[in-house]
Length: 45
Length: 226
Image 1 (cartoon, rainbow over the protein chains, first blue to last red):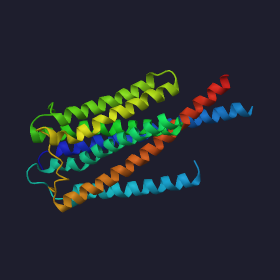
Image 2 (cartoon, rainbow over the protein chains, first blue to last red):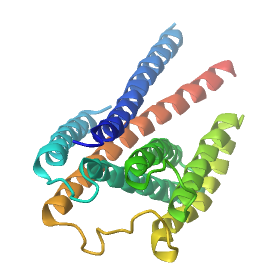
Image 3 (cartoon, rainbow over the protein chains, first blue to last red):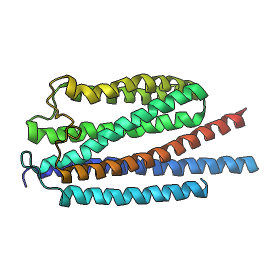
Image 4 (cartoon, chains in turn blue, brown):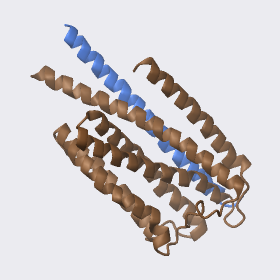
């Protein structure tokens, strides 16, 4: 299996970048949710 | 998020997951190894769909930008920006996986031929789009300026697409449209394209939702400050 390393490298990069972006969005969603909750709390007071 | 959106997203995630598993099975098990370039040719089955998704992403940005300038509704700006974000990520993957394929086949990582150069220019145009958004001080101005880039920048997409037919490039021609693919290879490619298209839709829905949420928070904060 010549050049198998190149094939694995290509697929690893694709999955790493896609999962990295999903992770980034998840973190952003949590941060924005916290900010929304804080705004709601301060509006209720 | 209402129950209809949750159901839609669950169906899309399920469909995307099933298609991606099928795509991986077909790429690594089902499809025969190409006799000239060997196992490295299998990069093609993800490289082409990733390029297709980036073209689709910039086309959606083009349309959403027109709608934003016409209607001035925040949802169009959110869709345009989310689509650029996903498009830039996928163009980055095109620019990485291309050279990984090229090194064992051509013997070089990169050459300044028409297809590769216009693809790099495409990536730079949409990086500029994201930079304009991050540097603009006022949200409506950022949306307006970036919408113009989203419309004008799209001119490069058909140029990238036709380069292999207009000039003699080192990059292979679009053999899909010339009927040069064996049926199992074509089937594998189509499943991969479907999988990445669903992934694109999911990522844009998620990202556009976050951008709308971010804009709402900014608006509420400025109202509170007043």
